[in-house]
Image 1 (cartoon, helix red, strand yellow):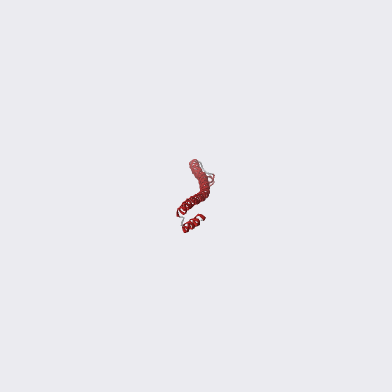
Image 2: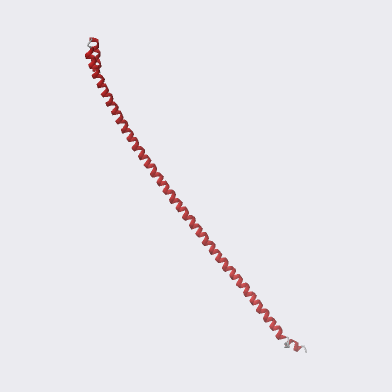
Length: 147
């Protein structure tokens, strides 16, 4: 700013050559200051971008960890559910086999009883027929009294 004021003073005084030199110095100084400000701004922007990138990377890392944790939890839950369903199916199969075994034993017992009664019935019938055949030639004690 001082060089610009000096330049204007020299122009008013009519020292154009010297004013031109001061103007060149002022332009060069202004150019250097502008470059320095631009570099400072660029560095500041780079720092901010770096901070933002780091912040985003941290956030992404947190999200990825959460996703992985949720994925692992989901897989654990799925495994627990699968094991529970498998156990339930095993229990149902076991119950059905036990029920089937009980039914089989009951049916076998009923069939044995029926077969035993049939055999017993055949033996009784055969004994009755034997008795009826053996009693006809003999005289019964009642028939003797009547005579």
